[in-house]
Image (cartoon, rainbow over all chains, first blue to last red; front, side, top):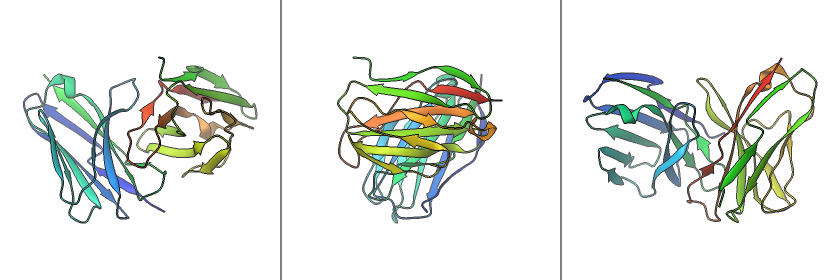
Length: 110
Length: 113
């Protein structure tokens, strides 16, 4: 079945450093979504990518969808303490099964 | 407008006991789903439904039952709880169409002893 892996599992950065998490799917995806979960909270939708090679930005966050639509990345520039949390990618291969990646837990040291 | 409401927030069960986790939504979303979250495992899909009367299995369906008699409710039943079912459970909904974002409830933290 479809599997989605994310690396790294954990990342500690100093405030102001950049951060990147990578998402890799075993199958070609119709679209990929990114979610953020604050400690003790629930996942909250950030963005969706649909097109091959698509790049979207939200302030300091840059999202990319690979040319083959099997991988994606989230890059945060100049991290802040408010960026703390776990970032998940979630993909679907044209069905209603949204399969989540294993997540990357980000800790920002002030 | 409450969005997605999950009850209870916390539950402790003994092995072999049964219980139902409730999920209710007031957004008229066609799609509803259940995920479990375990450390290092991400969110794993248990069951999902694309409308009243229609359910299907996700990645980890064993030990769980669901039904969807109304648009608003999608309960998750544990018939005989096992320690391996200790987890945080999230209900997530979305409008019709493949690409819409998921809206999550606040979760139910379940411990099975």
